[in-house]
Amino acid sequence: MSDREHRAGYEEYGEYERGRAKRQKRGGFLGSRAFLAAVTVAIYATAVVMLFVFSKDLGINIKAEKEATVAQNVLGSPVYPDDYTMVRKTSEEIHDGFLTLINNENACLRDGVELVNLSESYNETYKISDLVMQANRTTVEHMNNMFSDFKKAVGDNDVIISCAYRSMALQGELYDEEVEEKGEEEGAKWVNKPGYSEHQSGYSFDLSLIDDEGGITEFDGEGIYGWIEKNCEKYGFIIRYPSDKTEITGIYHEPWHIRYVGEVHAGYMKEYDLCMEEYIELIKGYRVEDPLEYRDVDMNDWQIYFVPASKSGDVTEVPIPKDRQYEISGNNIDGFIVTVKMNT
Image (cartoon, rainbow, N blue to C red):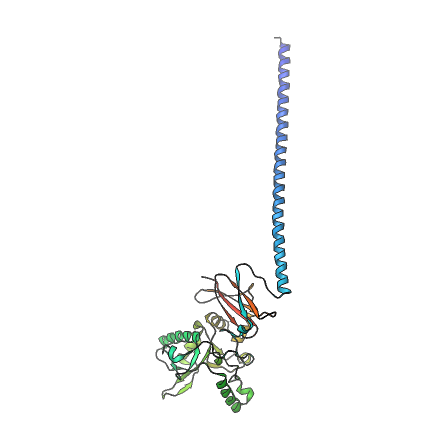
């Protein structure tokens, strides 16, 4: 084969190789474009699906929010999350519970709640003034615990329960005597009006002391008896009428008058120096969606919130977190106070 023929053959081969390379390059480019197009379509399809799902969920959420808004603002019926359960309370139950505020503006509408006879129920770490005295069952249980620890702390003592449950009739007699002696305005600062005394509920009791001759003298909370004021909140008690709260309670300082409200509430009132009137008003500012959070001395976490009584009917639905320990008490005015233990 001549040189010319060889060169012609190489040239034809070179043209073929160059054409093949171009075809491969074109094919790769076209392939990559096809791949990108496929990816773009897939992303777009995914976005469309996600947008549909999101729009659907958003629509459901908006619908739920609208229904809740209508229910709350128009029908007066709040809507709560699924992890809450409802406890139904009647309007009469506003006047039941350890947190019922009883004073000269708010009558006691219960005449002795779950009363027990102290002579049959107390643990003899304190004394009682008579054998027919009665008090609320839970109050007596906590009273026994407190005075048992008190006796361990100070030894033998002369503390005596001089009064616990008191009927409206007896309260009326005491009130009339005080008013006759001091006048109505001044007398009302020492003795509550009949029907407006905490003693009528059975949640309160008065302390006195026995003197060396066996007589009963006034309890002033001084000396070893100061232990009671310093520690009573641990057992659910408060000194109901503090010395610096007379303008709020309407009653002069009574170191002997003790009221059961429960450990959580007594602890909070003691820590923040609140009388019961102040505390009840404070709790009204906390609702289930924004509760008062409190950690007690035993590191238990609590949520406390207020549920207004229904204005549209006799029944109020009180929301409670599921599977939680709780208590509900009326405030004796316009709603319910819920106390929920958040840790198990």
